[in-house]
Image 1 (cartoon, protein in one colour):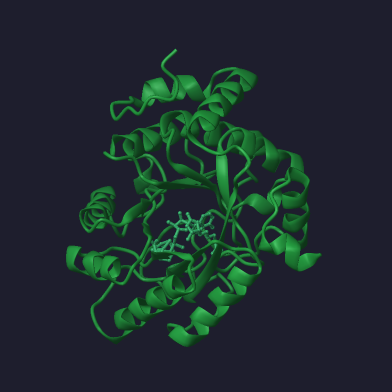
Image 2 (cartoon, protein in one colour):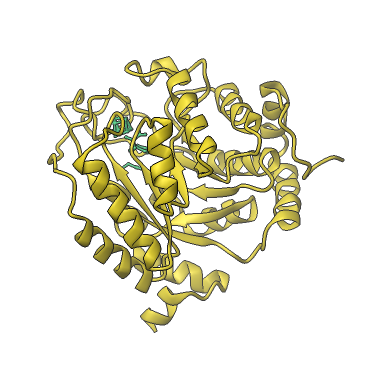
Length: 324
Ligand code: SAM
Ligand code: DTB
Ligand code: SF4
């Protein structure tokens, strides 16, 4: 058995075969790799904040922030003030978050006052002693370097799905555009946070194909969010059925086997999972969650329930102490 070795030449077919193993075999193997590479008791809490909400020119079918989906009930906001953002990060830290992720509904970063403000936010979050991640859309190499100089830990830019299904979800920018941004992120020495979404109508092969692209990066992305679609009224994917929790377990376990050293983040869609399904995902290799009342624009898992979950698994952090 070669489980746990770093490989960059995984094929989608090989990954699909892993994904479709009997569930207990898949989870058992993933847990063995997880324990080989990670502390099995450590689950990182990351907080998310939308620093610029709505009105995005891209047409991502899943996204409530796209200006193309006029039926979505969402207020469009200007970029937040850096001091307000850093104050929210400080509160998240007090509540137990170790990482602070900021998202802007932009197609791409533009040089100027708004980007300068984001740089100030990054510096402020880092000064709190938290990890800082931003997701701002497409990025040029010089912009990635500026973020790195400001101390940014990681840049989030997802592939979202496999290359063949991508065109069903987004038409306003290509898979290659995404890869170009990811290379700029890497070349600047930033950590790469890159993953995708399940539950958009894609096949298991598409999911495996996305993992194959992720595994092709050398080194592998340090951070891999696995999102389950949050189906938002007014978006083209509003009526997609809720993802079966066991599909998330399989996706997490397969990601863990293919990307042994990466932090796998159980991201959007966690509010549809009960405590036991979340713990199963953690056994299968998930070692981070988003923690806080909201994701970007939609509700996250309930904070009180999260505090109880962390207590149940015995992970004591500031959040639990604060609640006691
Ligand atoms: N505009 C930037 C971009 O797309 O790169 C950053 C923000 S965007 C909201 C970040 C990621 O959130 C998307 O790539 C997608 O994977 C995820 N996301 C957005 N809406 C979602 C939804 N309804 N359900 C699950 N994941 C979602
Ligand atoms: C990621 O992969 N998931 C997060 C984060 N990166 C930025 C975003 C999830 C957004 C879910 C829909 C919303 O709340 O708007
Ligand atoms: Fe815009 Fe990002 Fe939403 Fe796509 S996912 S519509 S790029 S905010």
